[in-house]
Length: 275
Image (cartoon, rainbow, N blue to C red; front, side):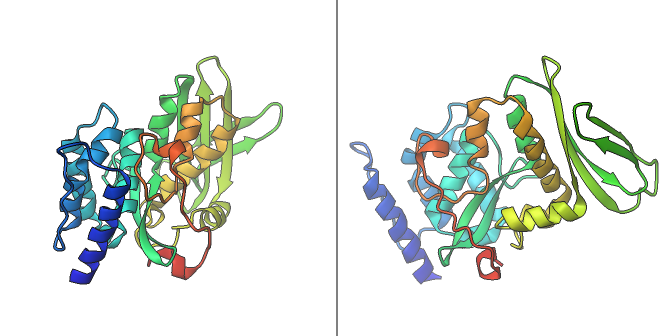
């Protein structure tokens, strides 16, 4: 474990040198320092990039909670962990909590374990409502014994009446939105299409720590909402937030969405799954 701690220390030391501390602020790192301690040491730099609504103390508590809830995050490169956590903080989403707003996922990338940031279903809904033009946005799961009908076209229609009991197997997901001026749209995906989409586009799908494993329905709802929102009038801020979904970054910035490059390797293999 000591060798691992030394490598983490060296990486954080390099980051500290790249972003010099202010006068009278000295970054002190030790060989036996844990990631929680490193979070505290890096706080002067983190504080600069935190949104005004989040205090450094709250950021630290969320970091410690994430590490406790998913112990393998402690094996990730520290800067990818801190960057993902800061990304989440700047979006105003709490990661790795029962709220399901966002997730920090251990993921094997570039041959090493790094932390991937993912927006959750409830986080996506929250971000969409901040858009200001949304009156309603939601997603639902459809089961084989539900009454369900939809058609696309100039006179698009969607009707869903859930069965009261014994709903049967899961067969569809749909996402809908309605704007304040009366515009609306929806998207429907079958369970089979959802699985194919997830395996193709969610690179951490096979990871044991992926929310697709623990919160499949919510991740499917998030996916179908994103498909529906392709036809919605959304602001630039929301588009920027979406661009951070399923990314790996290893640098801290005042604007994680636009100023820090995604370092995710887009390969779909078991080796990259983080198992």
